[in-house]
Every structure is written in structure tokens, then in C-alpha cells.
Image (tube, rainbow, N blue to C red; front, side):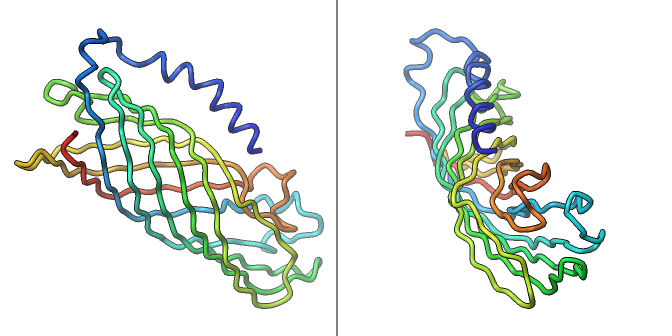
Length: 230
């Protein structure tokens, strides 16, 4: 699964770069790096299997999952390229999930609580929109790969199946951002929203690698504080 997302990233990278608005080199030499801090709430993490007909002997309610809201913070750096920009940085995200097992046939009963901490490195191409008074656009649409480092803590209750997890996962992110409120010192305030779908993190009897659904995903949004470019 991880190889599939990395291959997709390599295949689409030339497209992202080719979409950059052409400008003369002399016009982009002055463009400075942009630094942002962002924080918000999120929901997601482990994508569990809900197609239980592929699990041998499992009833339709033999396994289920629930996800709680979490929080995220991040530091981003943007390199303007024409009217667009290349964005990367380091994000930190926390959330919790609970898996319930009620399977008499396979004799699994109980609950498994999962606390998931993720460190993420995005590499996003930003397309600037509404550029009349904003060189990088009043709004930015962003897309690109994300690599995640996963730390999981489990709490068990009952008779549960064995499990394993991947410390590294990867996928594709799509999002948008805007920093329309500018202060006298040149700093700006705005918002962001990002969604993600990627490779599998958690595996057990109901979430096997051969199944289609298990993976990783999240939706997050929050506020941005952007520093005056320097």
C-alpha cells in the first residue's frame, strides 16, 4: 500500500510543477520565504474496516470503531514560485479511537482503546487564487504527499484479537488556506482546512492487509498565524 502512494506521488509531481505560473527569473528572485504557525482540531487517524462480509464468520456487528476529536499544531515554510508556492514543515497531531468487538463465532469480546500521536511532514504545491491584491493569492489550493510517523498506545479490555501496526504511513493531502487579515507589522491571520487519505496503520483479524478499506485518513482545520516574509 505504501509503495502505491509513493508511486502516485512520483507520477503526479511533474504535473504539479508544470502547473506553476510562468514568470521571468528576475521577477521571482526577490520573493522571500514565508513562515506560518497553525493550530486546530481534527478527526481521523486509523481507517477501520466496515465491510465485515469479508471477515470469516463475523456477524455484521462483530466489529466497529469510533473516533474522537483531536488537536493538531504545525510549523510550515513556503517558498514562493511565481504566483504559486511550495509548502513543507512539521505537523503534530493527536487523536483517540475505540474499537469494539462483539463476535461470538470467532470468540472476540471487548474493547480496544487507541491513542494515536502522529508527526507528519507534508510537501504541498499551493495554487494561488484571487491574486489582484495578494501575490500568492487570497486563497491557496494545496495538494501533495504526506509522510507520517505514528506512535500508538493501546488499552485492552476483554478477549481481543492480536494486532500489529506500522510506524510509518504515507498518502495524499488536499486542502485550502487563506490569510486575509493583515496587521500593521506585516504579519497575517487566517484559516486552513486539509484532508488526507493514506496507507494502513493498524492491522488485526478484522483489518487485514488484503482488505480494501483499512488505511489512514484525517480531516483537520484551524487558524494560521503568518509572519511577515523575510
